[in-house]
Amino acid sequence: MKALRHAKILDIINEYPVETQDELLTRLHSEGFKATQATISRDIKDLRLVKTLGSDGKYRYVTASKSSTDISSNFSTLFGTSVSSIDLAQNIVVIKTLSGMAQAICAAIDSISYPSIVGTIAGDDTIFVACRSTELAQSLTQELKKLI
Image (cartoon, rainbow, N blue to C red; front, side, top):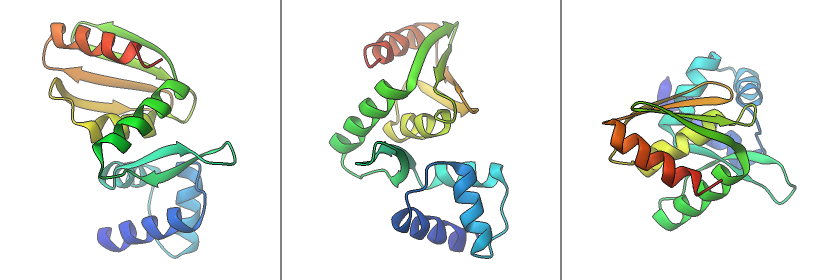
């Protein structure tokens, strides 16, 4: 069922400019798939979907490109336009975003695979990034602050 749902999600985002998880969930339900917001959130992470700015000026979900140059460019754009602040608490980097953008930015961070990052978790407008040490968290914070 997961593979079918993933395939349908990819079909949906290729056919429609899906801006939110809620919109994706509604479209999945209309196609006969039963899922929760938490399931959709995991699917977005599994599929490495990111939000990118469309020609119409609205953000939409797309699949992350396999090219590291494209991923880096998309990440920089998304990060620079959606992050409002970055703070540090020992080995945890706290990233505040525009409302609704944390999941997309978190997925983008995960797709880059920073070696200093142990794991990430995102809410609606906040991301916690657990780093391997306080020093690595400080370094990551400085690097990310250059993008905003």
